[in-house]
Length: 255
Image (cartoon, rainbow, N blue to C red; front, side, top):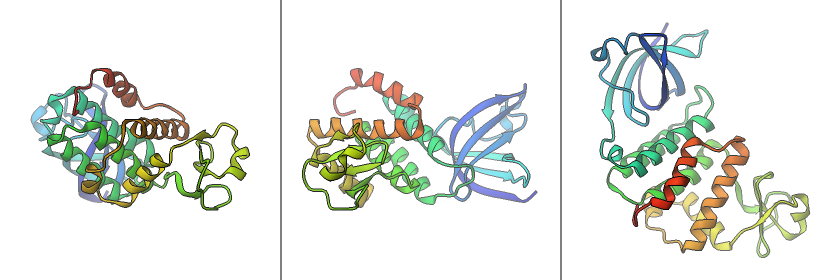
């Protein structure tokens, strides 16, 4: 079995038998992979990490050729994001980031762009209280990087430029011009400002997007469109999104 070392974000973990843990990682060089950490529950000093979800680690693993479960021989935490873990709102955001990556990415499909995006967002959560905006930027960019990006550039059906009376189709994954709207009678009207905000976030880097201003009505529709699109194409609502929705009523100003 070949041995590899790579940077990894913990997506989730579960107990395996009496002494071990199976963890799902998203790695810089190998994408999403599952690893068995033998004996970690009986000997805490065996690994220099407690494998907390969304923690950043360096792992050494033996890659099995005939299995998707690999043997992790070393796991050292590089950043546990302890400031983030002091806030229930930020813990929810970190959990949503890794749950969405786990849902979108196929096993061992390497995507360094998504890895870098996740690390940027997790580091930003450590010091930035604008949790909602960080999550919005993450959702838009991770959809683009994973190949699930909705089409906001032209009509998804006829490819014509869309000007007025625009609708968004969840089923078709993009905008519909007036002539094509009959192709999805469930398509919903969308503000031009919402389309412009999504396009801006897709084009620009993370730091510029943090300074983007949005009026409350546009922001509300943007979040609704993103969540409906994710639910439709994932065929489920993420557990962490349900938690964040419930926390919204208690979210302090600026969080």
